[in-house]
Image (cartoon, rainbow, N blue to C red):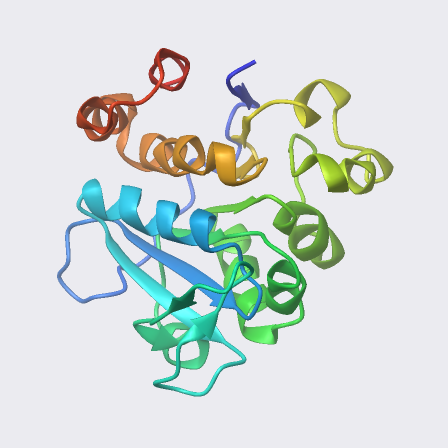
Amino acid sequence: AAGVRVGASARAAAAPRARATVGLTAPTALVPIAQGSEELEATAIVNVLRRAGWQVTLASVGVPAGEPVECARGQRLLVDQTIQQAAACEYDVVAIPGGMPGASNLGASEDVIAALQRQREAGAWYGAICAAPAVCLQPAGLLPPHATCHPGFTQTLTDAGCEDRDIDARVVVDDEWRCVTSRGPGTAIEFALKLVEVVQGPDAAAEVAAPMVLPPRTIAML
């Protein structure tokens, strides 16, 4: 299946969170990265969300301010802020890229986990892709019942009691937990488009997807 969406949102009545920038009307997102994060996933998330007009903060974890983050395949990325700076704000979405050991490094960050926990407690959206659902969300008690991840980590989701029918899906939305998960680099654009959809609606996601020359399968999932 191209994607799975489950659960009526029991948290829909939660108060909306403040924007990362005072007075900003566009949605906001935090995308933390650490040494060993998957650069294709991180850049796809940032790119797609910015195409949708979002204010996106790419934040470094475990790297001194001003220094690039060396990702899983050797690409070095410059960030907007450190996680300590970025954590002072609230966001519509916190999205965690995968890659190893990047996902483990993010999962070991108190600031990253605290940001995710704030999303969960406030009824705001968060997401994770590739290894991150298994090694970042699950140990922190933030893995929803309906989730997917990279094929190499699915046993963790099975052991955690996730629905088998979801684990092989490319993108899974758990509306009750307000969490989006996905499988890996090849699903990163779909993952990011789904983040646009859950916050801004399917028309906004379709508008972003239209000029990107995506496969019909991707368009059909919106």
